Length: 345
Image 1 (cartoon, one colour):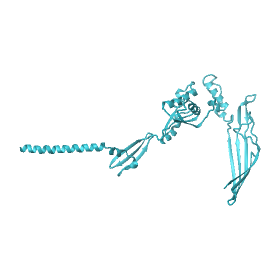
Image 2: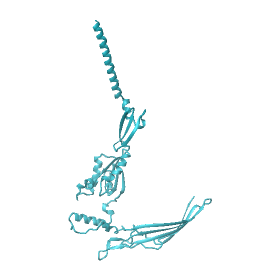
Image 3: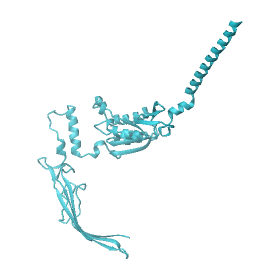
Image 4: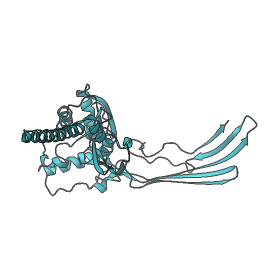
């Protein structure tokens, strides 16, 4: 009986200790698995409680991260970036480069919370190995349309640059329900019936056609072609253009002068019997003015400026061309006087 009594108390104590250990383990597991613990791990940095210390933060295009120290425990919290704007943006480059040209722009747009895509056209950029004489405008239009379809883009903002203005115009016509906006970024805006070369000078078109023909073997490989620098002084593209201005003031009086110089150009579509293009001469014009400032704060005049001037003071005529004169370069007006009065109340 004595042995059994000791055994009873020994077993009871062992069982109680084991039970208490199990209870502690269960409590610890419950605490680790509790919502409060996970919430503490996920709270933003600016809401950390207690003695938490922010060690560093950094960010990538995919996420932002912070490293904190609290109660001797170091935590690294990752937060995925979520687009703030649901409208997708498709960036389309022009000719002779690729989607890489938007790299910096796309990075900044992504940082701002935009969904950004970029397309490289067939035969250029990283797809230059697909270059072929079979590539046409329709090929590149299909590149953009297929990107919209493959990425499942709806209400997309399509931004087009340079040559891609041709593509964006066609895509807007064929997929009107998929585009929210069409943005021309220094791009060609074609009119009905126009082609990519319609906006280029005739000499530029002829040089490109001749280069393509020589590349295709249709003309002799030794045939000389016009070099790019020879096109600078052709058809409305002077080599030199400049302006200068000078203003002198003394009290309420002011005198000003302005000069404009436009260099000579060749009109390649108008040639003489020897095949030499017509030379459109250079032009230098000048303007002068005198101005007086009259302050009459208490009267009706207020702060008034009266100017008298003369434009094209040497009465230069616009140089002759086959169509009379080149309106994109020269002003047809002779010398004339003018006066103006401005006032502020």
